[in-house]
Image 1: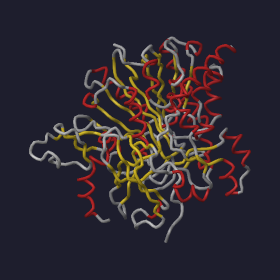
Image 2: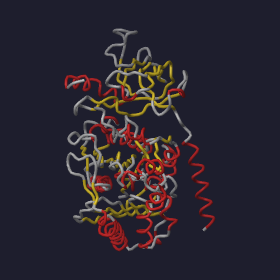
Image 3: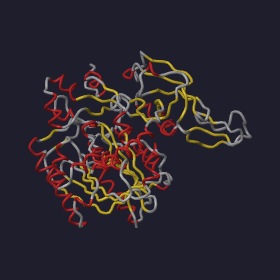
Image 4: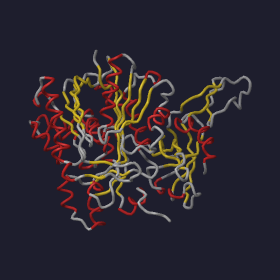
Length: 155
Length: 349
């Protein structure tokens, strides 16, 4: 991609950085990418911008072994169709796991990564990707507290 | 007015390379590096991670803990690093955009080797105290560079920590005092356009790290009328395990006060993230009323010291984001060839 890719980068930057979509207050449906009018309610729709929670499940996925020039250095990589908690499906890379660990229904959460870099010192495009949900960190606080108590008891 | 930290967050990429693996490639004696530097392994960024992505992840964790802070109330954001993705185009603007803080704030990238972010914390404290802003964010993040086969390659790591600074009831750790110590020292530098820093071996220790860390800390103790006995934890910049240990002993801090925040053996040196990740690990375990002494070090050279007192507000906020130890444990080892690919050491044509 050349400098001509800069306007496209600019147009999609906000929703890529923050996973922004549209919510229709009339029918309660969420959309991604953003819509100006609700396709269901048409002129009755009341749409507003919404930042999605970033949690979802793998609806489907594929493993890319031979990527396009822009993405080839990431190969093999996983492209998933992620169904967000709010409903919309989003196409995204799934990272921080091996291709063989991905499965349909797997819980994923949003993370912030480099999407691609334009050649020859061009713009770096950042945005959302998804990684497996790992809530095991919650249990660490119990362990940390117990360790601290043991240390205090020693001294 | 109680001014200090209202939220903190850490992030470390999950890839690791062991000292043995680097030593194997260069024919070095792994034990001499492991024991000489006091390091087992270091973190490595994925191909799609850089200082901006690490800063965003750390700052999102910090904002989870700073739950009372509305994005529109953040008036300043600084990213301290020596590996900003662009020479000209601020990482801070990308991070502010990703956090939804734009456009009503000031933002800038800061650089002072490994202490760029502690200096930015001082800037935020000043602006909050003066009433210019309600909250400010300072992030220290790096994908540290170390030339292949250089001793730095064993330690140069990736990671970051973010701090939301503010005042009032939400403060989880009050900054009681801060003091800085700066001189022009030729211990470590990287010229514009160079890929890797250079270091002037014999300058690294005595006239650089120890001169600044020890004097900065000592003068802060004098100014506040405190002694090492008044602190429950001490955190220093940690380029290796030996330097902070030696500095702590010379100042009269017991080893056990240093250990909770000493991460370098499993993490490596995350440059601008180093001392701030250490502080985050201490905040993960500190109890209300406990005191922390933090001293950063940046080559070139300078130190910033902080006297910090933990408040009761920490108990309700700490568990809102992952602790540092979670990131240290969540790891996948790679070999040197994968490391070389991810660090783009191969010339393709």
